[in-house]
Length: 148
Image 1 (cartoon, rainbow, N blue to C red):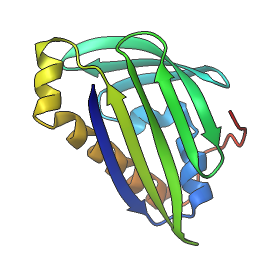
Image 2 (image 1 turned 30 degrees about the vertical axis):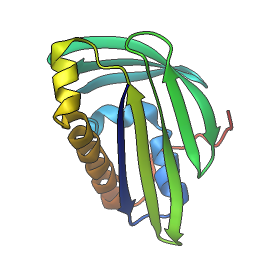
Image 3 (image 1 turned 30 degrees about the horizontal axis):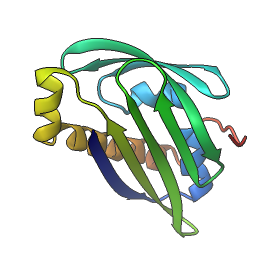
Image 4 (image 1 turned 135 degrees about the horizontal axis):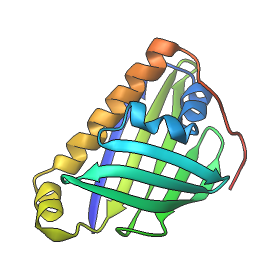
């Protein structure tokens, strides 16, 4: 199993960062290689992305969702993977967001990419683009406040 973990501080309240993250269908606007995320119900997502030069599709299930604290998931098809995003208020206007992602690289390209740290750099870039998006906007585009 490969593990990626990355943390970034963003200058928005925790509710703003969390609420924007729950707008899963906006992920292609800041996640490199992600072409589409479609939420099929409260706990299931269909993903389409380019990974190591190959188009991949898979289903993911949200396994834990606590407003303003955490969203966790696992793949239920495709490459075995799971992860969580946590949201911690640093102060009233700053949030620390941490992504932890575990996955099983398959094939030479994916294993080499994981060994060379490509996955970690991609997640870091995704978090930086998410931060830039939400700081520029200043407000979330929507919210889902339910618990799983």
